[in-house]
Image (tube, rainbow, N blue to C red; front, side, top):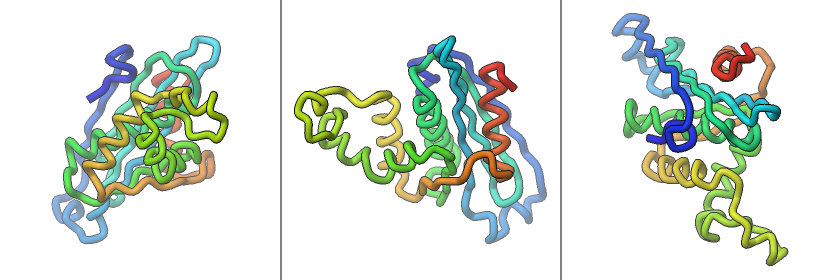
Length: 182
């Protein structure tokens, strides 16, 4: 598993066990819901990422961390990669939805990663000079691609950010807190 950018950063992790066994085994809680978010400070070129996982209405895992990066998109995709990595370790073979408020990450997961992989993780553009340029955050995208290929029951979905969705708000607060903005 990748720690931020090749273990360059700090990781904070908290596992929470709550609720009764009956609630955890309920048919309504078969699908994991994992909310993700990233935060970026352009001045320091550092950012935070966070994941908040639920099984039904029960929050079962929170993780966040910081590292150096190039843009907010770096931390948005890093948070989704961390969520997929956690699901592979803790819920292999189980259905899950990873929620992100980044349209860039959703498009990357659902459409672009297949083209990027086929094009050697280079830009897919008609301009031959741009086509040769590596995509930003290619190492994180490669790792995420591998995780999603290994776990076909993981769905990536877009949720509206800053709209009162509890899991998204918690992930946003954790990412900002990891960065020292919360």
